[in-house]
Image (tube, rainbow, N blue to C red; front, top):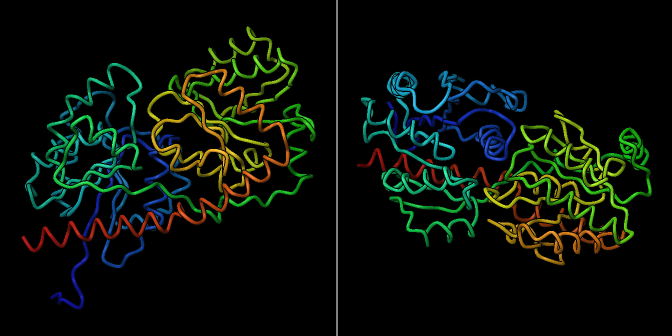
Length: 389
């Protein structure tokens, strides 16, 4: 029997769309790897079977196991029932949902479960500006659903302010910034090793190389970077680019590279398991997203590797990048402004200074341990309230 000095453990189940490569999914993996509180046990459930990030997960930390719910698309009641059975059989205390699709399943499963209000529902939301009219409609429809959430977690202050102004409310809210393992994202590659990596992609050691590390989806706006490069080329400044990743937009991106005459300046790596050496081989990194981006994990990783960031000013970008101090910001979709910031970073000394400050900022503010502690406090607080009530 437990005592106040030795309270019982609590089971937190994490529900994600999938373990595909994405910032929200990386955040879940980092959180599960870092949660080591003796009173917290965890399980991981994914709606769809995409395990690209599974090798990065310390499975020993997921003490109650990993399960796929077999969703193909949309809302499938069989998956809701399977989730509800998991909640009951495992006596889950808290169900932590990542983004709104998972929340829809989580809320329905709580309703179908015998756990009822004994189960606390947490939503961790990673979007500021919806990426499509469909996404915007889903957000408007999700308002009543979010109102039933016991804790709504925003990942930056800018996002929280945006959605509060839109009238989104839950029973309780918190802002917990994303964090990363700064030791893992430390630049340990020698200049010679970086030169070899660059040479493989046709980039010389003295060439000015910017990188963009993201899944090739419309909201990532790879085309904006390509148009900025073409603009600089017309002015006589030759900037090379390394596009790290793959995705549904790759064919369209390849066509645009050809149409803009950038075939000799731009390289696409395709999917890469470990992006760290490629990011470290770049002189600067770019995030050009026009929507969805809120508190970029990719930006934190690049900053920890001491790369200066050029970021579109959406979501929490200005909470990561202090313009002129550890990176540069530009209005989303403004090709001329993006080109201006890339032109500024053609100066190596400025790149080095901003890169060093980038590393310092991540170490001071966005180390994964800080994020994990905030989540531990929030989750244990919910459990304590539940058992007291």
